[in-house]
Length: 438
Image (cartoon, rainbow, N blue to C red):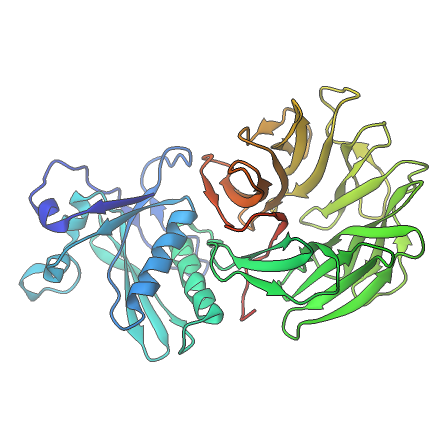
């Protein structure tokens, strides 16, 4: 949410609540600053002002940082609008900002960004404490482009960490399918590009550091590939063989293994193969059923997947070696159940999935220990959820606008935003946080 405030008017307004205090500070194990009082993510957000940024790229830097903090759903952006920039700074030539002014507009923090030869110098001001509580410098490529935008996203994520103790998710991307073409888009919906792959691609999945994608192809010669994003080259890892297909690959958290489904006319099973294409080993024995859509737990010890061994698709959890399988969605048993496309949250606590309800798929989550699921969507048909690295946001396919698009949901507050603008978008996979140029 962005709230616009005219600072000249705010100077004369004394009845607004003062911002909550942010208590310092920095130590060798930074945990983020703490805001006094109880924080309720369903109701409360930190009010933040991002000051105007000088230089030819300043407006773009400021706009991206504001949007990133807003999309984190942890901040309320107060977009100040003033023609008198001197009102922002302390009076009488004193150092610092006009903290009483920002307190009157309910700002908890002010972000001050200054261009420097190496990139951006950022200072975070605690309004109630009337001081700077953190500073940092962030490299920035000299020319605007995808790498430049990603560098600004990383700056936003560090600002979020300074305040909340948890890095943001702006410096991430989403891989998805449009037709049989793999696309990658920044987490804010910008920079959408098509990726070169083998023909008839589907089901992209990120490796743990975001440097490559696994994907499969469909047709008479179904295969599993790994695409190196730096070179644009795909390497064939597995060939399905005659009258079979491979699908729904996923990387293990350490990146050493890819688990995928191989299906024939009679059954489908899960297999594990090393990332360099070593010998596959079978993890499940379907005996006439179909197992598919694996997703690892964050520690790599277990796998959630979908199976119709009971006659209808349900979610199961097994050890990573294929033993100890047990049903997870053990509620409301019915022959009409259809639960599929699971994704294990990065904090390990829950699984997101799609369930057919009254003829339409909707997104739900269920604790990994089992129990009562939570409904997250109801408008249109909603499918194929994928978690962001913060274990809070999900990207999924939705028909709520009349065509299939990707949407992002904050699972704590319920806030939605549209990610893609071209119809037919589906099978999204959210990347890890990207540490370097991709």
